[in-house]
Length: 268
Image (cartoon, rainbow, N blue to C red; front, side, top):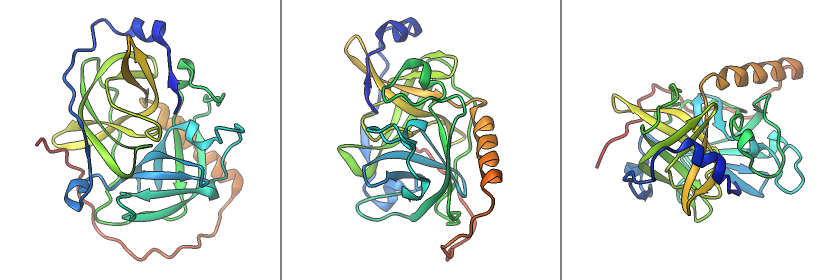
């Protein structure tokens, strides 16, 4: 994720100063801290970097489309070189999975630099090589795009916090444009693809993924891709690619299974 200075366009979205009260980042260092957030994981990309991703089905990870590309060459990263570390914390993951397929939104065009018009389609799906069927790892549901002023939260990894996820429990939607949310959330390199949540009846649901960081009058903001109908196009693209490629035998034997719980978002 590269910093983006899109001041004229972003300012047009904001009708009020950045005055909302945001919570601080909290590092999730213990099992109790991460309980309910194990479906957020670190995506290791060909040994050259990482992004953040979130499980939205037992074998589907949602992330940012630009995470699928080598930032130096612009080439697509071989899915076989991508690993999802669910609940990665201090050298251990709740589950380790490779990628079988990876698709970006059909309208996304990678250009090496963040541009506002690309943010609206900066979303991707990764099909894991084996599903994650652990009681503690519950895929997140996707909810409708929140309105301006809505309270949201983010769980992410980043360059200075790569070994444990961090939770920002409260940040806000500062503005909206078709396909794009401007957020007051604290993000950095590595936070690309991080899930942005709203809370319904104490359960976290994904409404966006982090695409880029930007600045408004010297204030840092995040740009998120609004999911809305994008997941439908993504799932169709993934199904089409899988149909063209045909079946691929799995090489991992799943040793776990069980019922699922719910990801709870509890105020301190």
